[in-house]
Length: 231
Ligand SMILES: C[S@@+](CC[C@H](N)C(=O)[O-])C[C@H]1O[C@@H](n2cnc3c(N)ncnc32)[C@H](O)[C@@H]1O
Image 1 (tube, rainbow, N blue to C red):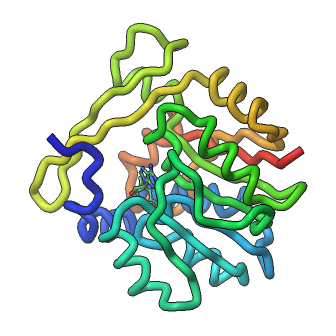
Image 2: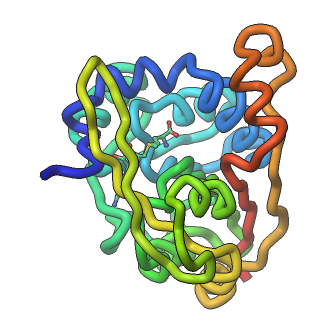
Image 3: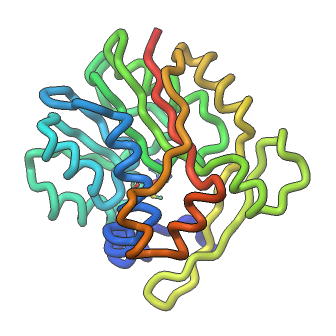
């Protein structure tokens, strides 16, 4: 069985991601707010998917590069972004194809919970960031995924599966639950100091457009957002 098969659902995933309340009215606005003013900054979108964040970063004046594991999502991102955004296939669990101190900011949206061991990606992010550069990322909130997974031990790092339906097909997704203390420890060990950890609210317009999602997002944790700086 293939898990996390973004290639199989690339178009449907990308289209849904563009407009659903979780991504469009909650995750993207929140992480872009955390990124702040990116004008003229060299920014890497790590796990760029179909390129929605990269497009928003370009619009805000950043010089953007991106990578992802899924060839098909990369193809959609290329169509959307053109040649102004260099995109490559790379795996967060291995060395990244970028020079040391290349970026001012690494932004990674909803990708780290696909990775069991954060030491390699965080070490690589630190290497490719300039001294004092920032890492801004979002992940499944550990209190949400522990409930979703019906996990037995919150303090353990463990994998769990969920079933998504896209384009009428069921896709098995496998995520890694990390307790908050493990996330903080991994950032500290990799040489990052944490600036902000946020539990944002959705945009107010979600209240009337998507009342059910709005109620869920304003009453229970969903994603957790970090801003950390290289020491
Ligand atoms: C939930 S999607 C998020 C996509 C995009 N960042 C967004 O928020 O719209 C997760 C993305 O992580 C990518 N991904 C998963 N594991 C990866 C890995 N080991 N290395 C690189 N990308 C990975 C997937 O291909 C997918 O594009």
